[in-house]
Image (cartoon, rainbow, N blue to C red; front, side, top):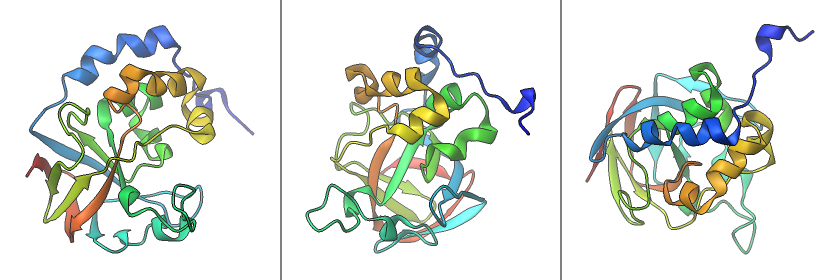
Length: 189
């Protein structure tokens, strides 16, 4: 049975646009890791206090490697999309509550400016003792994203401005294995 308290009202385009100024105030050079989410199976999420990033498997215990990718010729996992990172301010606006952040499907939620201008392809970020590198492959919204956050949210992240700001997040690959913890500093290398 669904209770009225369990129903989430999605924001409309005007409400989402009104949140852009807050998103743009994200720290540019050094931010904070606010959530680590492991996906042990399809549509399952585990919020972690700490985790291990590995150059071969991404977030240890996540199913990234098993999922494969339509963007590779043989359907194997795309190493340019090992770890997805999303801006916490953008996610909070769309999700409406931190309790719903893990639904985005991104493994790392950060309070940092992840725009194309601030973090061009090839930029490296240190997180704990690990280092990730921003990939060229764009991170885009999908039907599941629209189901969870609304059609207007999908349109919001898919506009040219939304793509420049990387409101849907950014793909990265692990270039140095290491341990990460909620609260760690995320900084440009």
